[in-house]
Image (cartoon, rainbow, N blue to C red; front, side, top):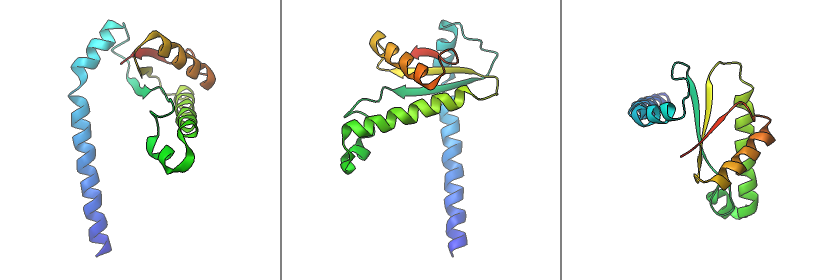
Length: 130
């Protein structure tokens, strides 16, 4: 019985991945516009990361509500983002790395630049507002 249940769960997960893949492929017109607008090399595969700035009260809210507090939850979110940026910056795979950030203003562009510096990834990512 457990084997059948697990098989059903795996089938459901495969279906969800397929639907997500198709949903993501429906986006290229907008992303193509962004790529052309910023003169990125469209012939090279791209790794696109979407991130909002980790600020208290706006990031990891369920973690904050569990008793850790908003400030600590924001620090956890920041550490996770810095780790992700650093890890993908060190990758030897030849891809363009694009960080789409929110909120899309110059103050947050500077904050995301600081995050990239903290990750040791200043030149590895192209910053673009969402």
